[in-house]
Length: 428
Image (cartoon, rainbow, N blue to C red; front, side):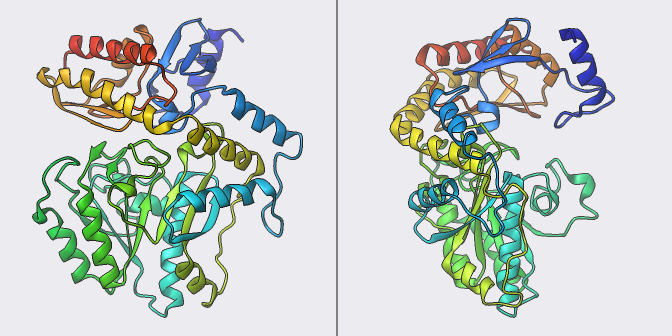
């Protein structure tokens, strides 16, 4: 098929994320990708500002990740994880247990971030079931959160401003506190935690766990909040016998300037979810880590088994790539690169604060966020970005950057200069 025929077929038959089948957003046909550059089929080259939704932290077509994939393909691409195991999964488990909070000693593999959240929620419910406390079957969280698009994950996404409000009448009803208001670098105000404190104290007997994204609320608003919120939350959860789940799917592996965002607060969860950057954007893989206490309580309960087992759980090809991805992370000075990107964002994006169309600009680690006063016309502004040679995917009022850590200073300058040009000319 010609490019025109391919795009026409795509538009007619393929349902892309967060769009309509009747009047879908325009798609651009990609020919190849290498480093931080996406090449379109028509020859245009785009500097990638999205890391393919947080995941491609080492860029595309990386020779070492390619080699890891090829080597594993020559052994086996997949084998079921029920009753079998393999070196890539064992090695990856060892790496993850070494670099995540010390209390997390047990690991459960799945095939996507949203499923990792489902697993975490099931673990929390079964933990209390095994303790004879079946009424502890609700979850508490904060507004403006996002935890995925599968069923239980949707129930802890923001019910008003989130993407799943049409399902509110059929989803499990959970407890929501206001999202943290004190920003990351602002002086802490104890009043910011009062409503969460009251909610947990009043509903202690019903709540199995609190689940939230530590420090950075991603798709729910790209907001950065004060680490003290997590310290108070952890202490209160311990006091009230409520489990704490950290969704680090978007924030893990260095994006916020710490290896994991919870390190900003020096707190450890009972359960942690990881995904996205785990394989460097090569394959879908996720994990849910938990403590010995949670795992052993479930395993000594009735039933004594955890009933969950994705077909591609512990996929050896994905695990092999993840192992090399983590090795690359530590061998390429990720901390320096994230700080370099952060410094550049601060020096460039903050100039937009004077723009009357822009509500706020904020930066943390390798994340730069421009919040507009109104929702943008995604297709219109997307075309403008493409015409300027960059790939940036807005969402609602948010235009944000999260480039691969390997982006050069020259490529980074090109990315931000193009974004500044489009936004300075943008009219709502």
